[in-house]
Length: 239
Ligand SMILES: Nc1ncnc2c1ncn2[C@@H]1O[C@H](COP(=O)(O)OP(=O)(O)OP(=O)(O)O)[C@@H](O)[C@H]1O
Image (cartoon, rainbow, N blue to C red; front, top):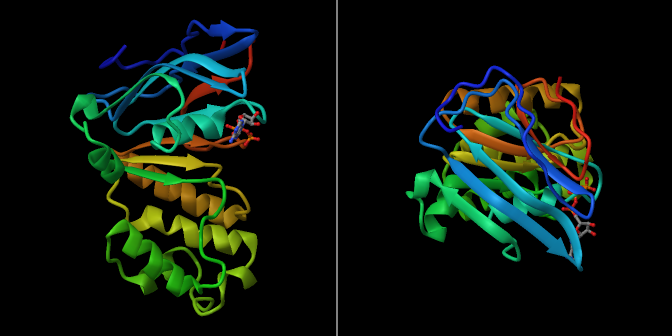
Protein backbone atom coordinates (compact mmCIF):
# COMPACT_ATOMS: atom_id res chain seq x y z
CA UNK A 1 0.00 0.00 0.00
CA UNK A 2 3.01 2.25 0.41
CA UNK A 3 2.94 5.33 -1.79
CA UNK A 4 -0.77 5.15 -2.50
CA UNK A 5 -3.38 7.70 -1.64
CA UNK A 6 -6.17 5.94 0.19
CA UNK A 7 -9.60 7.52 -0.04
CA UNK A 8 -11.56 4.46 0.99
CA UNK A 9 -11.54 2.94 4.39
CA UNK A 10 -10.01 -0.51 4.23
CA UNK A 11 -11.04 -3.61 6.09
CA UNK A 12 -7.70 -5.21 6.83
CA UNK A 13 -7.31 -8.88 7.64
CA UNK A 14 -7.16 -9.51 11.36
CA UNK A 15 -4.52 -11.65 13.01
CA UNK A 16 -6.64 -13.54 15.51
CA UNK A 17 -5.16 -15.65 18.28
CA UNK A 18 -7.51 -16.85 20.98
CA UNK A 19 -10.13 -14.33 19.96
CA UNK A 20 -7.76 -11.38 19.93
CA UNK A 21 -7.78 -9.29 16.82
CA UNK A 22 -5.56 -6.50 15.64
CA UNK A 23 -6.29 -4.68 12.42
CA UNK A 24 -5.51 -1.50 10.58
CA UNK A 25 -7.80 1.02 9.00
CA UNK A 26 -6.10 3.59 6.77
CA UNK A 27 -9.08 5.93 6.97
CA UNK A 28 -8.52 9.04 4.90
CA UNK A 29 -4.84 9.12 5.63
CA UNK A 30 -2.24 9.84 2.98
CA UNK A 31 0.70 7.48 2.92
CA UNK A 32 3.82 9.18 1.72
CA UNK A 33 7.31 7.89 1.20
CA UNK A 34 9.78 7.51 2.65
CA UNK A 35 7.95 6.01 5.59
CA UNK A 36 8.84 7.20 9.05
CA UNK A 37 8.18 3.87 10.63
CA UNK A 38 7.06 0.47 9.44
CA UNK A 39 5.92 -2.29 11.79
CA UNK A 40 5.51 -5.84 10.60
CA UNK A 41 3.77 -8.66 12.43
CA UNK A 42 4.11 -7.25 15.93
CA UNK A 43 3.03 -9.76 18.53
CA UNK A 44 3.00 -9.31 22.28
CA UNK A 45 2.55 -12.06 24.85
CA UNK A 46 2.62 -10.95 28.47
CA UNK A 47 2.19 -13.30 31.40
CA UNK A 48 1.26 -16.06 28.91
CA UNK A 49 -1.58 -13.94 27.54
CA UNK A 50 -1.55 -12.85 23.91
CA UNK A 51 -2.32 -9.15 23.91
CA UNK A 52 -2.18 -8.75 20.14
CA UNK A 53 -0.70 -10.56 17.22
CA UNK A 54 0.33 -9.83 13.66
CA UNK A 55 -0.03 -6.05 13.91
CA UNK A 56 1.42 -4.37 10.79
CA UNK A 57 1.27 -0.75 9.78
CA UNK A 58 3.21 2.08 8.17
CA UNK A 59 3.50 5.62 9.49
CA UNK A 60 4.04 8.07 6.67
CA UNK A 61 5.03 11.72 6.84
CA UNK A 62 2.14 13.91 7.89
CA UNK A 63 0.21 10.93 9.16
CA UNK A 64 -1.51 10.34 12.48
CA UNK A 65 -2.21 6.81 13.68
CA UNK A 66 -4.69 6.46 16.52
CA UNK A 67 -4.24 3.29 18.59
CA UNK A 68 -7.60 2.34 20.01
CA UNK A 69 -8.93 -0.52 22.11
CA UNK A 70 -10.36 -1.37 25.49
CA UNK A 71 -8.43 -1.18 28.77
CA UNK A 72 -5.67 -3.77 28.84
CA UNK A 73 -5.67 -4.34 25.06
CA UNK A 74 -1.97 -3.48 24.87
CA UNK A 75 -1.99 0.10 23.55
CA UNK A 76 0.68 1.36 25.95
CA UNK A 77 2.67 -1.83 25.39
CA UNK A 78 2.65 -1.17 21.64
CA UNK A 79 3.83 2.42 22.07
CA UNK A 80 6.57 1.31 24.45
CA UNK A 81 7.72 -1.25 21.87
CA UNK A 82 7.92 1.45 19.22
CA UNK A 83 9.82 3.72 21.62
CA UNK A 84 12.38 0.98 22.28
CA UNK A 85 11.36 0.72 25.95
CA UNK A 86 9.94 -2.79 25.73
CA UNK A 87 11.84 -5.41 23.78
CA UNK A 88 9.99 -8.64 24.61
CA UNK A 89 8.00 -8.99 21.38
CA UNK A 90 7.95 -10.71 18.02
CA UNK A 91 7.93 -8.91 14.69
CA UNK A 92 10.00 -6.13 13.19
CA UNK A 93 10.09 -2.35 13.39
CA UNK A 94 11.87 -0.44 10.63
CA UNK A 95 12.64 3.26 10.92
CA UNK A 96 12.94 5.81 8.10
CA UNK A 97 13.00 3.10 5.44
CA UNK A 98 15.91 1.50 7.21
CA UNK A 99 17.95 4.72 7.34
CA UNK A 100 17.78 5.01 11.12
CA UNK A 101 19.53 1.80 11.97
CA UNK A 102 21.10 2.50 15.35
CA UNK A 103 19.22 2.94 18.59
CA UNK A 104 20.84 6.38 18.99
CA UNK A 105 19.40 7.54 15.64
CA UNK A 106 16.02 6.11 16.53
CA UNK A 107 16.13 7.88 19.89
CA UNK A 108 16.91 11.21 18.20
CA UNK A 109 13.98 10.85 15.83
CA UNK A 110 11.49 9.78 18.48
CA UNK A 111 9.69 11.59 21.23
CA UNK A 112 7.80 9.37 23.66
CA UNK A 113 5.40 10.83 26.20
CA UNK A 114 4.01 8.24 28.60
CA UNK A 115 0.56 8.29 30.13
CA UNK A 116 1.97 9.66 33.38
CA UNK A 117 3.17 13.26 33.28
CA UNK A 118 6.76 12.16 34.01
CA UNK A 119 7.86 15.38 35.63
CA UNK A 120 9.67 16.03 38.89
CA UNK A 121 7.16 16.79 41.64
CA UNK A 122 9.49 18.83 43.81
CA UNK A 123 10.67 21.09 40.97
CA UNK A 124 8.81 24.14 39.71
CA UNK A 125 7.49 24.40 36.16
CA UNK A 126 10.51 26.51 35.22
CA UNK A 127 12.94 24.05 36.81
CA UNK A 128 11.17 21.12 35.15
CA UNK A 129 11.56 22.78 31.76
CA UNK A 130 15.29 23.28 32.36
CA UNK A 131 15.63 19.66 33.49
CA UNK A 132 13.67 18.30 30.51
CA UNK A 133 15.67 20.35 28.06
CA UNK A 134 18.93 19.18 29.57
CA UNK A 135 17.81 15.56 29.14
CA UNK A 136 16.70 16.28 25.58
CA UNK A 137 19.90 18.18 24.75
CA UNK A 138 17.91 21.19 23.58
CA UNK A 139 17.89 24.84 24.58
CA UNK A 140 14.62 26.69 24.11
CA UNK A 141 13.27 29.86 25.65
CA UNK A 142 11.51 28.68 28.80
CA UNK A 143 9.40 31.83 29.08
CA UNK A 144 8.08 31.42 25.54
CA UNK A 145 7.26 27.81 26.31
CA UNK A 146 5.47 28.72 29.52
CA UNK A 147 3.41 31.28 27.63
CA UNK A 148 2.59 28.90 24.79
CA UNK A 149 1.44 26.18 27.15
CA UNK A 150 -0.51 28.57 29.40
CA UNK A 151 1.62 28.35 32.54
CA UNK A 152 2.91 31.93 32.82
CA UNK A 153 2.48 33.11 36.40
CA UNK A 154 2.73 29.56 37.76
CA UNK A 155 6.38 29.06 36.88
CA UNK A 156 7.76 29.07 40.46
CA UNK A 157 5.24 26.75 42.09
CA UNK A 158 6.45 23.19 42.81
CA UNK A 159 4.80 20.84 40.32
CA UNK A 160 3.26 18.78 43.14
CA UNK A 161 1.19 21.83 44.07
CA UNK A 162 -0.16 22.23 40.54
CA UNK A 163 -3.28 20.53 39.21
CA UNK A 164 -3.08 17.34 37.14
CA UNK A 165 -3.83 19.31 33.98
CA UNK A 166 -1.17 21.90 34.77
CA UNK A 167 1.35 19.12 35.41
CA UNK A 168 0.38 17.55 32.06
CA UNK A 169 1.02 20.90 30.38
CA UNK A 170 4.57 20.95 31.77
CA UNK A 171 5.22 17.52 30.25
CA UNK A 172 3.71 18.57 26.92
CA UNK A 173 6.11 21.51 26.49
CA UNK A 174 8.53 19.01 24.92
CA UNK A 175 6.24 18.97 21.88
CA UNK A 176 7.00 22.64 21.34
CA UNK A 177 10.74 22.27 20.99
CA UNK A 178 11.55 18.66 20.15
CA UNK A 179 13.16 18.12 16.72
CA UNK A 180 11.94 14.48 16.69
CA UNK A 181 10.05 13.41 13.57
CA UNK A 182 7.96 10.74 15.25
CA UNK A 183 5.84 11.47 18.30
CA UNK A 184 4.61 8.54 20.37
CA UNK A 185 1.96 9.89 22.71
CA UNK A 186 0.24 7.76 25.33
CA UNK A 187 -3.06 9.36 26.40
CA UNK A 188 -1.73 12.92 25.96
CA UNK A 189 -5.14 14.52 26.57
CA UNK A 190 -5.42 13.11 30.09
CA UNK A 191 -6.44 15.82 32.59
CA UNK A 192 -6.40 18.61 29.99
CA UNK A 193 -9.31 21.05 29.87
CA UNK A 194 -11.03 21.91 26.61
CA UNK A 195 -8.61 24.76 25.85
CA UNK A 196 -5.66 22.49 26.57
CA UNK A 197 -7.03 19.84 24.23
CA UNK A 198 -7.46 22.44 21.48
CA UNK A 199 -3.94 23.70 22.04
CA UNK A 200 -2.49 20.21 21.80
CA UNK A 201 -4.53 19.34 18.71
CA UNK A 202 -3.30 22.53 17.05
CA UNK A 203 0.30 21.62 17.88
CA UNK A 204 -0.22 18.13 16.50
CA UNK A 205 -1.61 19.60 13.27
CA UNK A 206 1.48 21.80 12.95
CA UNK A 207 3.77 18.81 13.44
CA UNK A 208 1.92 16.81 10.80
CA UNK A 209 1.90 19.71 8.35
CA UNK A 210 5.70 19.91 8.55
CA UNK A 211 6.13 16.24 7.67
CA UNK A 212 6.21 14.70 11.13
CA UNK A 213 4.21 11.66 12.17
CA UNK A 214 2.30 10.77 15.31
CA UNK A 215 1.18 7.50 16.84
CA UNK A 216 -1.02 8.02 19.85
CA UNK A 217 -3.41 6.32 22.20
CA UNK A 218 -6.51 8.07 23.38
CA UNK A 219 -9.90 6.96 24.61
CA UNK A 220 -11.42 10.10 23.20
CA UNK A 221 -12.51 10.89 19.67
CA UNK A 222 -9.92 12.95 17.78
CA UNK A 223 -10.72 16.04 15.76
CA UNK A 224 -7.48 15.65 13.78
CA UNK A 225 -7.95 13.19 10.87
CA UNK A 226 -6.39 9.87 11.79
CA UNK A 227 -6.06 6.29 10.68
CA UNK A 228 -6.87 3.70 13.31
CA UNK A 229 -4.99 0.74 14.72
CA UNK A 230 -7.57 -1.21 16.67
CA UNK A 231 -6.35 -3.66 19.31
CA UNK A 232 -8.33 -6.21 21.26
CA UNK A 233 -11.61 -6.24 19.36
CA UNK A 234 -12.80 -8.93 16.99
CA UNK A 235 -15.58 -7.12 15.19
CA UNK A 236 -14.85 -3.99 13.22
CA UNK A 237 -17.10 -2.32 10.72
CA UNK A 238 -15.79 0.70 8.87
CA UNK A 239 -18.62 0.97 6.33
N1 LIG B 1 5.04 -5.26 33.66
C1 LIG B 1 4.06 -6.06 33.24
N2 LIG B 1 4.14 -7.40 33.35
C2 LIG B 1 3.14 -8.21 32.91
N3 LIG B 1 2.02 -7.75 32.34
C3 LIG B 1 1.90 -6.42 32.22
C4 LIG B 1 2.89 -5.51 32.64
N4 LIG B 1 2.49 -4.25 32.36
C5 LIG B 1 1.27 -4.39 31.79
N5 LIG B 1 0.94 -5.68 31.70
C6 LIG B 1 -0.29 -6.23 31.15
O1 LIG B 1 -0.34 -5.97 29.78
C7 LIG B 1 -1.69 -5.72 29.43
C8 LIG B 1 -1.75 -4.51 28.54
O2 LIG B 1 -1.38 -3.36 29.27
P1 LIG B 1 -1.34 -1.95 28.56
O3 LIG B 1 -0.98 -0.95 29.61
O4 LIG B 1 -0.49 -2.02 27.35
O5 LIG B 1 -2.87 -1.78 28.12
P2 LIG B 1 -3.64 -0.52 27.52
O6 LIG B 1 -4.36 -0.99 26.30
O7 LIG B 1 -2.71 0.62 27.35
O8 LIG B 1 -4.69 -0.23 28.66
P3 LIG B 1 -5.39 1.12 29.20
O9 LIG B 1 -6.45 1.49 28.19
O10 LIG B 1 -6.00 0.68 30.48
O11 LIG B 1 -4.33 2.16 29.39
C9 LIG B 1 -2.50 -5.57 30.71
O12 LIG B 1 -3.33 -6.70 30.86
C10 LIG B 1 -1.48 -5.51 31.77
O13 LIG B 1 -1.89 -6.23 32.92
